[in-house]
Length: 292
Image (cartoon, rainbow, N blue to C red; front, side, top):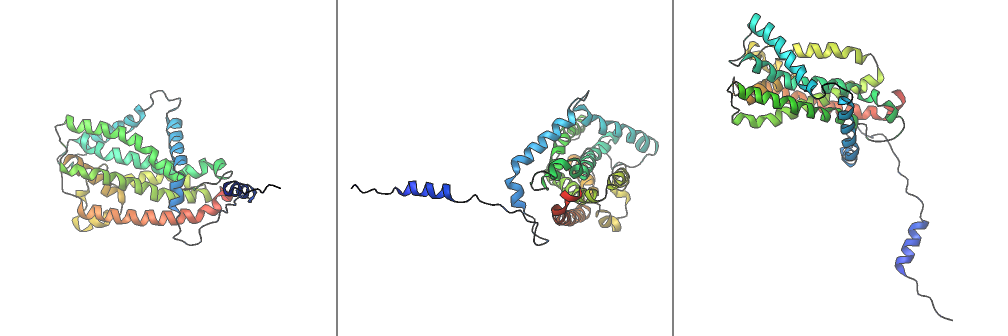
């Protein structure tokens, strides 16, 4: 009787096929600091598709399409130039009024739009949230990142306007990526708080228009931060957008003083907002599917 020699590779395949299916158990974070950012990175393709979907929905069936991105700050710039510049004659730190206002409105429009969409993103995607698991942090991230396309278009117009007025960006322009990152982190940090609260209390969305309007008046959009007394400027910088807006004007045109204390206070405030928002949003992630 012939002997049969077992093939180890065949035995391994049979053993793998006979083994039970692996079970993945989804659990809420065990500690306040368990942010699971590595899990968000593993779902980066889903993040890309959410961003692509947001861009398609935003411009689908629009008459003038991307031109809305430019028209909104341009029209606001015209109103600000007429009323705050020509009539009220507010100081502009030596800059032409159109450049002074548009340099503030470009980052502000990005921030206000990203904040509004991030606040509503969990409720707007409630059908997806309640049916399939994925890191919920991807939703506010997609809202904030998709707005960068609009900002890029508005920034190109701003750069052309700056050059048209004979202003040349200098070495200070290397600060622009950091300032944009600061605006992004501010929108994400505040948006994480508000999106989780909006899933619990739907009246948050009705407060948003007032909040955005009040925040704009509290930021140096229509006026320079030089009107704030120097000893209180660091306190004024706790409004993160104050440092972003003043930094954009200074970095792009080189006019005015570097917003040192103002920008440092804004950076500290952004870190607190972002870390607190991440912790709060992650703690709400386990119950948001039942509440939304």
